Image (cartoon, rainbow, N blue to C red):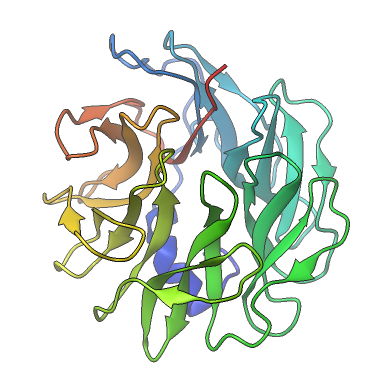
Length: 301
């Protein structure tokens, strides 16, 4: 289990599947699907948790190849680098690396737990969560790792998994308050937080649509972990997945036409799927016996 708090562990329930050591290179591609851009994802297909990229032509390349856990990648706006979570220094840190696997650099450089980076739309800053002040809060730093700033120093409970709005003026995140985890939005500086969900259990891991009109999130309100969408004010909540699988970590394609997500059927490892924003047209992109999850789309050229 990753070294995160109980509340944050709920958000990453999809990462607890057992590792299966298999050889790289036998994965199938997107089976003729017209993907608008590349997708970064986590996989243990090389025998260890690393970052891979699925390209629109179906080719899959490995970005990291370290003995430690590397995952939760987020593309830079120019598509040249990936920010990611790594345990290669013995504790959770935020790293960046070129897409060709060169130049890994530790941005957070702190003895605390730093994780889940999200690059600002202008490329100048990176959101992440950290417990360096005692509880998990939302932090932001410059893209070179300088000037880390706590955005939620007085917020109750753990805050985590923050993402920028497409215009960079707001953030969506989840917060564990009052015994439940719910989705919030706030200004980019953490001010004026607004709670969007209020059901018991877990609601979290939000993903903002590229048009700014919808937020996808995962929730267990229906008894299993599924993907929902809602308006940025919390209205018009719709359930997109409803099957025997556990479904989560949604990520919007840069054109807003697709949502990639991870799905785990009982007795199986996770796969990266894609669907339309209304829940239709589901397709398995990775089709591999290893664990594949945490997709993130590259911006359009």
